[in-house]
Structure formats: structure tokens, C-alpha cells
Length: 312
Image (tube, rainbow, N blue to C red):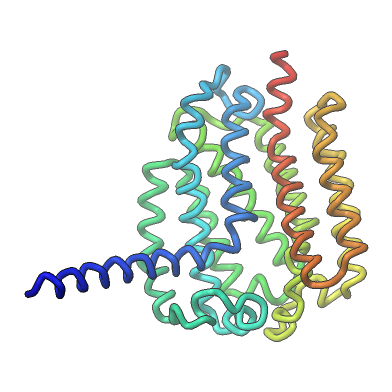
């Protein structure tokens, strides 16, 4: 084979690899801001909080921060499994063709059959990864929730069931990310941690419909019973605004923080609560959804704030 032919073959292989990597990135792109980054922050901040959350009385910051790549990997591989399971379904393809046409399947980069095969290969890989990183129990529970949400139609028939499954899923993400950040098998979560996880579930159950506000056209096309489509747009906005304000003050109170610990949750919560009522077009709802993710991340930081208050 000529040198030019070898060079062209090598270039083609690199382009194929880059194409496949980009395709996988597109599968999970939409959940990086809502799950991967916030849940990584939750896990790391919880691990750094030491006895506030876990049995580790004196957390070593360097050791915890070194685990950031593992926490990101654990969170991302679980998101990938969920996204492949979700985006391969016929109704999801219809919805994505309207709301997220850039995703691999509606854009033609990936077929539903190829997504199924990736899921088939990805599931055992995810289990093996969690065997190494920790958080295997949460991954197994999440895969059960993924099946309920997607294949059993839990996300489509009733918005209460949809939000319950989402709440349980976020509890698993938060608990698993914390276990990985603390070190596989080294420390356990304490009673306060489980109370905090229950509160996180409550937050998700009562406010996650924010993500549905900008997707109403696509959800309507697939006949999905999301809260804004069932109760109406205006009512749905109040079901977001009021709980957001409630949790913005309840969470700092739960941790018994000083005044400065209330500022960021209250500020971001007020922005979300007002924006969702005032700015009601699709682009504004997408921006408010970004703000919602910043708001919930600010809540995820509160155990670490409490830890530092106790050590000042």
C-alpha cells in the first residue's frame, strides 16, 4: 500500500472515531447541565462536608477532589444509559424531531437500532464501572427506574408518576455520586444525609416540570401527559414558582445556616420563580431552565456551607 493510501486510511479512521465520539456526546449533551455537572457538584460537596453527611470526620480535600473524574464518569455513564434507552423509542424520536432535532437519531447520525445495540453493550460496561467506582446499588436501582420511565411508559401517562420516577432517579444520582466521591467502601452516609436526600427528592418531584415548559410542542406531538399539557401552561407555572420559593428558604433552614448561607438560594430561587411567571415564550423557558439548574446546584452546596460554618 502506498504511503498516501495509508495516510488517507489513517485519516479516515481518526475522522470515524471523532464522528462516533461526537455522536455519543450529542446523546448526553442536554443532560450535562441538568444532571452530570450538578450531581458531580452534589457528590463532591457532600464528601467535603465530612461528618455533616458521612462517617468521615475529617475529609481530606485533596483526596476528594482527585475523585472528580470518577464522579463525572459514574454520573455520565448512568446518564448515557438513560438517554440511549429514552431516545431510541419511537415516541421519543417524534418528540425530538420537534424539540431537539440536533439529537443523533432525528438528525440521522444514529439509527434507533444502533442506539439499542449501544444500550445493549453499555449496560454491562456501566455495571462494571460502578463495581470499580462504587455506587453499584444506585446504578441498579436507576436501571429499574429507566425501564419504568421509558419502556413501561411511566413518563407519558401521568405527570405525577413521571415526577415520582424522576425524583427517585435524582435521589439515586445524588447518593451514588456522594458514595463515589467519599471513596468506594470507605465511608457510609449518615442519617442526616438520608434526610437531605429525601428533601432533594421533594424538590425534584415538585419543581422538575420546569424542564417541560419549553418542550410542550414536542410533548403534544407524542401525546405525553406532562403537567403543563394536563393542567395548562399558566397553572403549571405557578406549580413551579411557589415550590421553588418554598425550597429556597426551607433548605437553608434545614441546615440551620447563618444569614449569608441563605443569600444564593434565595436570590436564584427568586429569579427562577419570577422568570417562569413573567417570561413565557419557548426561548425564555429554556433560559429559565438553565437558571433552575443553577438554583438547585446552589442548594447542593449547602452541606458544605454548614461544614465551614461549624469550623470557623
